[in-house]
Picture 1 (cartoon, one colour):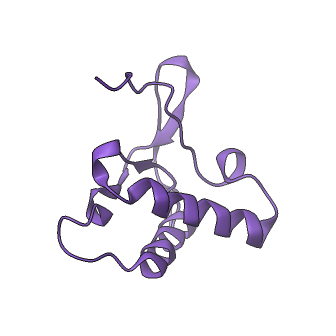
Picture 2: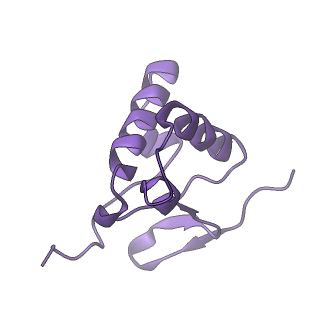
Length: 96
């Protein structure tokens, strides 16, 4: 499989051209199976899709990402921010 194309944003931030939208785990469509969601996130990362989009209005998305992050760190003994995925609130405006 060919690598997922990346795009460089201002400030040097490089992300996947295809983002994983976390709205699917917002709970708006019914109950969320957290372990299954975390498993799916790992499959996305394994496929090279390492950029996740989430917002505070996505309900449990941040908690599920936290579970995923903890799982990866436990399994690999590494920091997912620097080696596998990128997550940042740097470009997020303060809540109103």
